[in-house]
Length: 423
Image 1 (tube, rainbow, N blue to C red):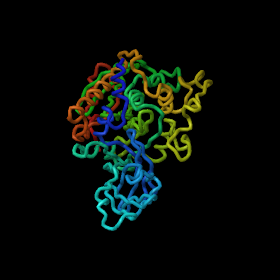
Image 2 (cartoon, rainbow, N blue to C red; image 1 turned 45 degrees about the vertical axis):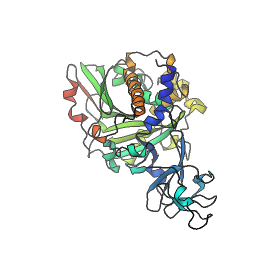
Image 3 (cartoon, rainbow, N blue to C red; image 1 turned 45 degrees about the horizontal axis):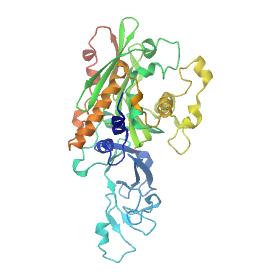
Image 4 (cartoon, rainbow, N blue to C red; image 1 turned 135 degrees about the vertical axis):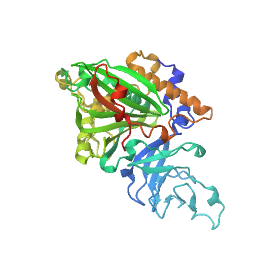
């Protein structure tokens, strides 16, 4: 369990909070690139780490991520005119570029010194791998751009998506690092012991700290004196990576891929769950049809969203459309969609979980270690030092992997090649 004080330190992400200051030292996924495709197009509202912002793509295709309100009289820049390499407030015509510099004060005398003083809060933004990334920390401590292997896969071999969730980020991250729950929450064919997760509901878990977070390994016993080994990667502050290479018999799956998630705080009580996947190598493209099929399995296919939003039709307002008849006859939850099953549990908790009331066991090893690392990182930043995982050289050459191997085999030797980046 955690003390109330440590729980607050972990969960609160707004400006000036210990966790908020720590998270702002990393590049954050802010938008899908597809949300901001048009040059001089409509601005887009963004709420990130408790801050209200507006994003726009200017005439030269540069991305601006700025305060949602004009510094003059705090009028909303969402209604602004995106024109000629800047965003212009419709209230009095003040105009700013992507760096927050004031370009025009049409209601002030020509040559007014106010132009040099009237700055708009602006954060650096990068458009990489289908994602617009934001850096919201101290300018002098800005790290290099992110360089995960999935970002280096070509667009034909990569897919990225996001979905809204009404919960604190931490319980979602904890769910992603909890491999054991898949034997229950994601048991969609009850009684079928041929799957690796149903065959062994008590995987052994080991955590191996790294420069970027940790690797954690789950091992499940299978019939025929075999073992299913899955090596995950936890990359600070809130990214999980997992292999999806092997099928249940130990061969390559139909579309061997690697996937994972970010759980990015909108504020203390809301997140976007980002999902990405990429092909194992150049022979494995991620076609639109396959991507949609995989998203549909997770419960976030194109028809699963409320039109025009990133909110699922299955949500707390309708109890995630739980089907009690299905729960009684076929699936453990009666909820359709692997991702929706996760969301149902995490949104059904308190919006911020009271972890002082928990009762943890050995199955929670990866969750416990993540909490320790995140807490330690907040104190590291308070001391004026850098948190782990900012340097891409620490993580760019690794990947997660999974494989069925004979019992007694050293998984490190058996899986060494699979744990090296190929892109």
